[in-house]
Length: 401
Image (cartoon, rainbow, N blue to C red):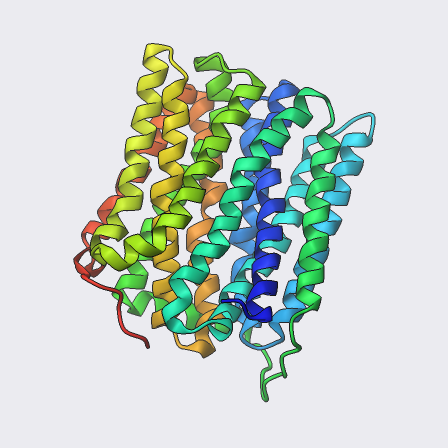
């Protein structure tokens, strides 16, 4: 995995994920510090997540027909534009939340374009037997960003330097642009005019016809709805129910990154040594445990369960993510990788704005405590989808398509 192509893909992926995680950490803290309501916070977080819902399928359709290097370049430019808009918005005398939401949407759009292109190019950069390890390397980079970004964001917000967070996201976009330019130019395939609806249908049909991919998609829909509901509501929940400061909230989020990092290191050995079916269940099951632990902490007035819960939310789901990404790359024909990747990304990430909005609505009606219970129920549903599928009975990784 030391080829220049893989190195450039890894650099682009890590840079994009750094910009993405900076926004996920920075935006809720900025709004909490400004006294924004739970509804406003959930709406801005939903705008960030909406890119996966609105952009994934069109990008996936074009990723199988045009140069993926060109798509990555365009994605990096979106990150640069969104970060510049965010910095200018915070620098103005009045910073309307909708401009921050637009900035977050632009950055997330660029991240979608980069990540889907990297997913489709990775099987060409490494051998099939190396996919789990290669995906683990990419997720290790995302995990490192998840550790650093909440701490950095909390420090910047407490010192009223939030615009610098957008400058750091801009730097991530610039690195992604350089890495994309360094990739070899792909020849355009003959007869690759894109029929968008047909391309989306091809990817969706393939996923629905594959029982394991269908189970992964259903699990991902429930899990990510739960996770982004938790993402939107944790900052106001922690401030109101646990009495945590901005710095303490950032530190708790950084524990999530530690869980991701250790999960990325453990994923490939665990996938080799443990039954595949067990590994499919392990990630969602740890998520259920994590939210229950967080709720128990609130009842007792303690903050350490929140940190432990975030570690569990990072470690278990990371091993699941590496596993399901590798399985998708194994069972999907190369000609369909972009379209299938887009379909799965819509399932995995596209429901996040819906989860954030649902949590915000629940919090407005019943409080942030009830919003966390909603996340717990959705995490449980993600386990049920897998338990009822052939994925839970796998002893080893499936064979190639």
